[in-house]
Image: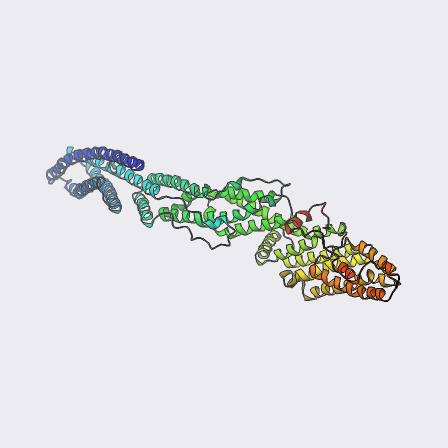
Length: 621
């Protein structure tokens, strides 16, 4: 009700203003109309008096233009009255606009006709100083100002203001925020919501367009500028209201070079989805609407709206990601940022390509440069980081160093179709900028894995106990053959590489059995000696680990198959006093098959990544 009251008050005020302006215009037209009969009579008397004089030819040539002025003025008077009447009626907007255009054209015709008639009368004035000639010239010059008066404070000026108010009302009453799709608050795996509908009904768009076309046709650029200002103000308010639904407070977060990108990892995915929505939907709709209403003048108008769309806040957040601590996981986040920006490259060029958005262009180029340089630097340092781990000690229990699953899982993710294509593009851009040799992602990852194998060989040699060295190699080769087979990384490394690690497991399992449990069978033909050797070996291996359940079960069965039959023969054959029988055969079998259990579960990949690039990180678990 309050809105309706305000609208009625505004309409009443506008109606009073129109009445006042029409009254002023009517007074002027009435005064001119009263003068016209005398002007027409004076012209004809002048023609009659000069008929026998030498100037009659000049008079006859001047009469048609003057008569044309009289006819055009009559048309102007009729159209002006019609236009003034329609301002009070409920005439359709298109009819009102049509009358404005016709009235404007008639005024222009009157001005041009007056100019022509004045020219002829001025030529006539050179041949005679007849009073009627001077009077007619004065009246024509006054008529020539009719167009200017109508534009400033006459019927046409009022009509333009009526259209301006209509333009603002149409925008204000029909501009609503875009509904934010629920998918923007999820991982994006759910069924996507329908795309946002056009921001304004077609009928409203057509009316706005018609009003602007009327101003352009009437040559009123000032009125065009005023309506553009109104448009920008209303649409900016609508866009800002739409953005509130996205909950973009996270864009103001900050990181330093000592902070991990994991602190804002969850927001990075949101950033990509939100940025895409703002550019491809919200701004796309605004750009389309702006183009429909303003045509060739879209750029100036739209750029002001685009600058208030929060796009610079999105760029600022992208820069925040580049400032975070240099660590392995950051590479994926930088690739996510690059992919999001690259996906919107054409849209950015369309929306922010004009000189009005030069600041955004500079900021975007700077962000892309930081992302490309940062991602390339991390990727190029991966082999060095793997090699750096070579200086650390291997796990004391012979387990798989956390560097191994990190490299495998990290490499597999880099070989993912999406990430690999983006990384290839980033490296290609980086090489073109700095004129360096082309880098192929798959080749570099192959080299990283080969470097990891050198680490494993180096670590294996540091074990003083041969059996523990075998446990370490069994663990690592089993992990590589089992977790890499059937993956993109496995396809990259090849079947022969996988077969080699499978063979290493078999070879070092046999060597482990011989170097540990096989030794207690040598020169131990008595139960007492066997038991002491068994206890000593079991105690030594109590801290060792076989990480994989199936490998551990298989190895335990092999140990039991080696020593339990011998132990049984000693017990059953009387190899020593019965009082030295410490274990039953079943107990021996149970002990050896339950050995080499891991104490803790493997760390998550994210924890391994956090530690791998730390100067103090160890290769051990």
